[in-house]
Image (cartoon, rainbow, N blue to C red; front, side):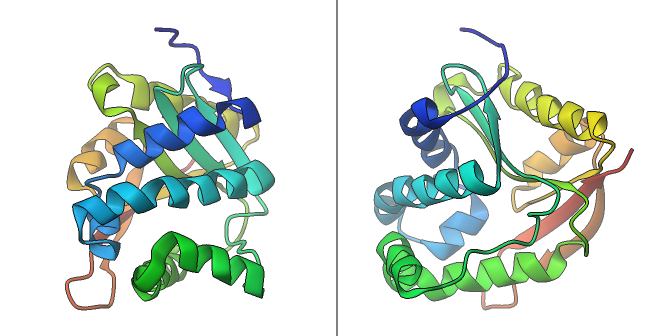
Amino acid sequence: MDRTVIRLGPQHRSAAVATLAAAFQDDPAVSWIIPDAAERTRRLPRMFSWLWDDHQRHGIALGTPGCEAVTLWRLPGKVHHHDPLWPPELLRLLGIFGRRILRASTVGGAIGVHLPPGEDWYYLRYAGVRPDCQGQGLGGLTIRAGIAEAATAGKPALLETATRTNVGIYLRLGFAVHEEWDVPARGGPHFWSMSRVL
């Protein structure tokens, strides 16, 4: 396996989407949005196809050449950006989330409220490792590559996670918890907001 970290482009789309969809199958926030496991399996490739396209326009994707590990970053100036919800975009979101769209909107809105103000950040929105490749340090490797890009640009980095076991990983990568919060809905997932300053 090639452990080099590169900037991923259009030719990596299919493999990157498959990795992220598999990696987030049991994510607490995604599981709250789409409680049924079989439905998640169907919908996550659509969700990450949309997110991949978003980050090709407004950010970067870093990962291994075989997409065993993939990270999606929003760049400074685009941290809080959302494409306008014109009818085509709304129809696309309905196709992704179906009747779960209100839950998805609730989580997205809560994340937006808890993002630090300002745009002068590198924002790690998603990091995933293909399940059969986990435990080999690939996640940390790809995240460190994004941290290095942020440091070269003289920018801090931020993220949020709903997975308790990820908190220790991010602490070891130099992030610190600056807030814990719950999505304001019945049974809403718990999040840790974390930042890495220079």
